[in-house]
Length: 295
Image: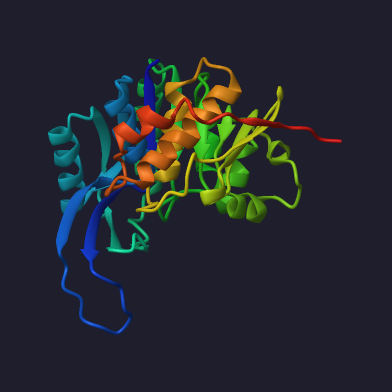
């Protein structure tokens, strides 16, 4: 299984650790981490850690874009980021000792129509040798709302789409293999109860700490973590996407269980793109999805 992850609005992630987050107060930061980020980059990190061949691509520019590429190289994650003139955004996550995380996300650069056209050619060359493509995250300024739909239609391989808002609705209409919204994102994108009404073949919908539900042509299954998980939830959804890719040829109930286990293991890790391997190995077999019987 060869995966290609696409992060159109990549980021340089900065994580601060503090004792407690108090608005209006001065905080002493106990630890700082800076690394390449963005949802597709996080997926690539997890897949790389799982031993799944992966290539990370997307848009990167300016000094932050250089730092992003350099960090991927140092991390051993293969990358083919496409250069743009605009400055790659930064995200700042403040994590308190309680495990509560607060995220500040910059909007990102403006992408020109010429850069988008050149990236599409770059994408076509990379996608032709992939077995599955992952499209993740927000769209930067300058890109059309149907940018993900264009990427879905440009390749003949299965696509996993992790987006929200109009980008999710437009991208899902192009028929990706799986969409992976959380419950709130799904409600915002469609007034219908059935997530497959958006146009995707299947959907993995997250309900946060309560677990996930897989909607497929074979049935609907739900599963929950083996215990209450505390930690940093940033990147948990990206780990679930990575689990879907890593277990691509398994039956849906098993894929759902893998997604729940790896997502929970990611919450226990300090940084997005990492996961608690011992927890994952210990609990992945403990999760038994339940089939939902619909009238």
